[in-house]
Length: 125
Ligand SMILES: [Zn+2]
Image 1 (tube, helix red, strand yellow):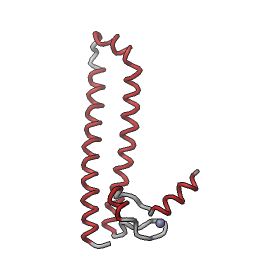
Image 2: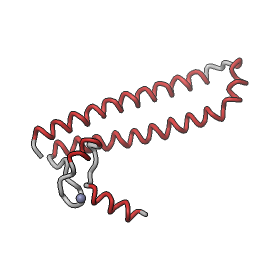
Image 3: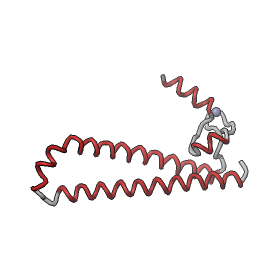
Image 4: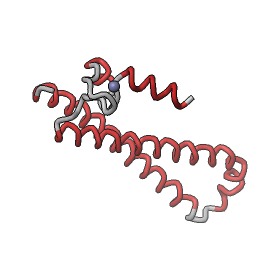
């Protein structure tokens, strides 16, 4: 792939990456605030907490799910950046063909072309 195109995708990936890092940091901070409030021993809020516990746990789980999914995404963005540096970015890891520009534009960290991806999905089922 041409240097100019690589730079273009690199920019997209870096933007997505910094957005993601910001979100993850925000998530971490709000998580810290929650546990700090709970361990402060404010008993007046206790009964309210008990009633609210169900949804509280849900939120915690959802936060966790979100964080691990985003972390996974971050990992793939980093891999894509590595592939840009190595020069094999935009090539399908299965068949070596160039991945659709449109596809890369939407999801710059994809590693497979549409055909290979579809074949893999079929095998999984
Ligand atoms: Zn392929």
